[in-house]
Amino acid sequence: MKHTLWIITLFFSFAVAAQEPLTDELTDSKSAIDHKAKHSFIFSGGMFVQNTAQKSNNDYYGWLASGAYQIYFPSRFVLGFEYLIDRSTLKKGIAIGSSKAKYKNKIKAYSIGVHLGFQFLRTEHFDFSLLLIPHYNFQKNLRKTYFNDEDGYVNTEYNEAWVFTPVLFHRLEFYYKLDRMNGFGLSLDGNIDIEWREFWGSNTLLLGRLMLSYRLTIPN
Image 1 (cartoon, rainbow, N blue to C red):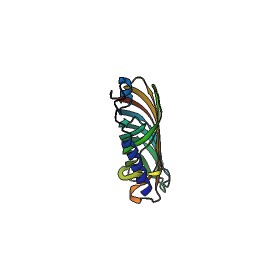
Image 2: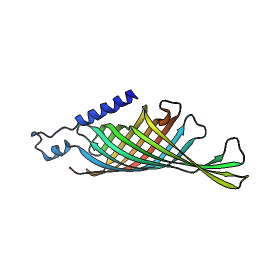
Image 3: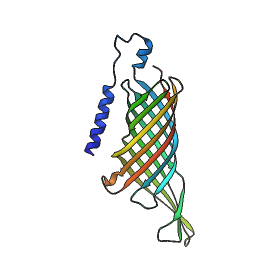
């Protein structure tokens, strides 16, 4: 945990230092625009897949949607904030140790994260960035079990909270810019999270996401 906090502090420091003020030497209007921070709103949708490594038959996949706000600084550092929701498809199965109980499972997840990254490529029409996303992932697990003996359903629910690890909480982000304001992108997430209640315990969540995005950049 100590090393994770150091990583976050370091990236925040870089992001703040990246705010380079304009100087009198920038007399050309286009140069002045290029040396200002750019503010963007991003709307994304896509698919996710996850697996709890220490729990059998606990893999899920489904759709996701997110909204984010990002600042692109002149020195290529990126700072942003994101709210994301995951919704799994309905998963059916037979309860372990019983041939008389069938279940239907699904999860509803909410994630809040901070974007800390760097633009490796920044041209007139293309952007490519690597982001580190410290995040908190709250998941609601819903199960509907049907018992043959009782000819009825029992609904159960339990919650889990997951936090990022220093091992993997990355995003690769690629954008094609139609113009200064509008761009379309493709993002790929890879996360290894640990359960909040058992910090540094045995439960590990492996999570991947693939997203298509629209980015609206506010004109300078």
